[in-house]
Amino acid sequence: MSTMLIVAVALALALALVSVVAIRLVKQHRRTRRQRQEQLHRAARMASPPPYGLELAPEFEALAYENANQDLQGMSDAQLREHYESFGRAEGRVANRLRTRTDFVEQIAPGTAVLEIGPFANPVMVRPEVRYCDVLDQAALRERARGIGPDYDPDKVPFIHYVLGAAALDGIPDVFDAVVSSHSIEHQPDLVHHLQQVARRLNGAGSRYFVLMPDKRYCFDRLMAESTIADVLDAHQTRSKVHSLRSLIEHRALITHCDAERYWTEGDPAHRIDAAAVRNAITEWRDSQGAYVDVHAWRFTPNSFADMMRLLKELELSPFEVERLYPSRLNSNEFWAVLRL
Image (tube, rainbow, N blue to C red; front, side, top):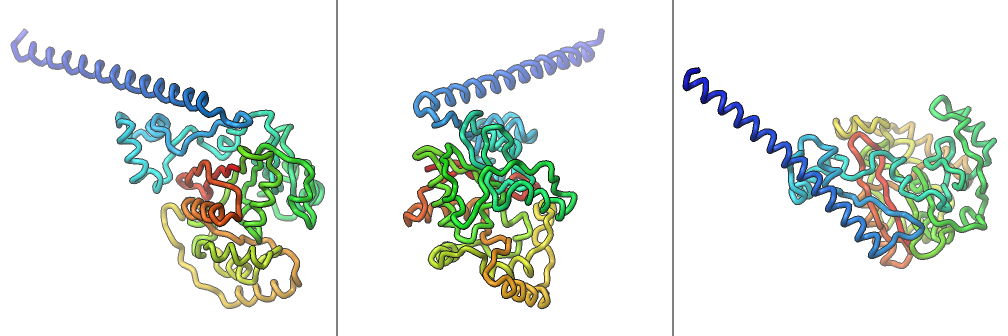
């Protein structure tokens, strides 16, 4: 065997050995990180046991972030955190153990007393212990689903335990450990009053409001301005029970398409306000004669929603603080928040 061949074989063996060692080091690194995170989770539970058995995922988990993003393999925890803060959050990357909206609400332990607001034909929680409230009973909601079209399955409308009347949530006689709403909070004419009513349906300090709501950047609200504290306080001061003319005009004349993936990749769509759409919105508002017309009243991003909740808490208009905020995921049109008393 020639000297060059011997050297080549030796180099190949050395490279193979280095590769094996590197793979073992990476596996050991992941095992160590996983063990460390499990130890931290156990320590946190022992130091402050979550009420009602609810243990919430943090916004960022290094191991989950690494596992969900192949291009980040081998980074340290500090590097992963820096990448998420600098790029990952804005890119909509998965950064924790939660993969779906079902994962989000499944953080609520089985057996917990839960109220879901406005499930219509798509309840986000389906458990025997969940109670549902809506403005119509089951039969009327099923009829409405049939009238809308194939996107809504009448058979998925749950039994409505509480049909909401003029007193809204205050008409419900029971209290719960958690309240859930999916794409409902943005429809409330008086956001402050809604939050106060939810608080009265909760079972005291430590109970939570799980909110799934559209991110205005990735839904048909894209071209509308974010809601401000002035907007929220004006609606509360006037005790709004129905939507304003402004909300109807925005919803009828400024809405765009509903394809979240296109917003993530293409940005703002071309749009020209149609005078006829504005005129029709004015007519619709006048013809309603003070009756409720269902449109969006509020438009938030994750950051602006968190800031709004902070302001309302500091102004003593809401008892809630944001315990968790899970930003919008790539190609999704919604973000998730947990508000805690």
